[in-house]
Length: 294
Image 1 (cartoon, rainbow, N blue to C red):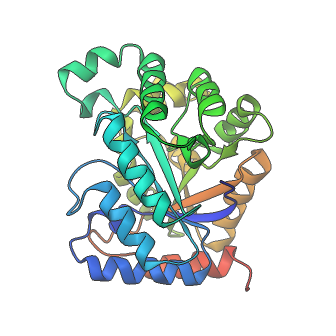
Image 2: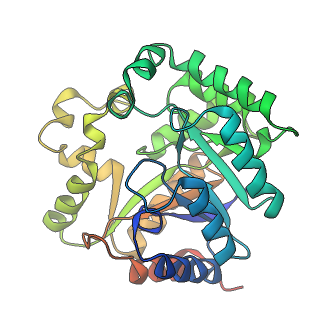
Image 3: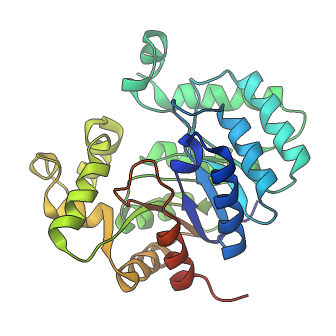
């Protein structure tokens, strides 16, 4: 699978109860020209992840629908193989399985023990998934990878990597490990707000859960941030590095930074502060700023 351009990463499209509204929104994103629509795994959705993906595939005709991400602890590899092949069979080259190790906080005690060796756990899952699939579908899956060894696994066993909660500096680091041909599709959170105080308030609300997850905080420490930067909702330096805020010019510039650092595809997550509401106005602004007509 080849994925370039710009995508939208949306928790709302997964979690909102009004599925008619989410299907209409996905159809509009498709018409606006976004190359992919990403939805998270996790819990709290009115539908299982693969059913949500099927729904969004039905609502669209061009955009790739991607999971960002399916936790390997959410279902076993045999079940994933069935769902994976079902969606690809009905939608050739329009479904991308984003998959990852998840976080200790969100798994049961048995998984916690296995997560002591995350690379082994992920490798074993890939082995089981390959065994259960009728065809080689490694080119239609992408791994949520942050550290060097997981990035190497992403390069060797999948189409590439979908890093989340990262900066363009990480994108450059990831590209060096992935090599020139693997897919690199970082997520970038954005806030359409030009007042620094309000913008950082919205950003910190978004960042709160992630600053409590060692996978992400260890990665930030790897790239020059300090324990002090992680305290009290994140320093201004950290907030501004992880979440892009401002107007169209600032967001276009940040996307360009990721591309110059080696990203094939940048997927944007709008932080609007309007809980339970689709950020359609912001998505339209992003399309106007980032997608060429036609």
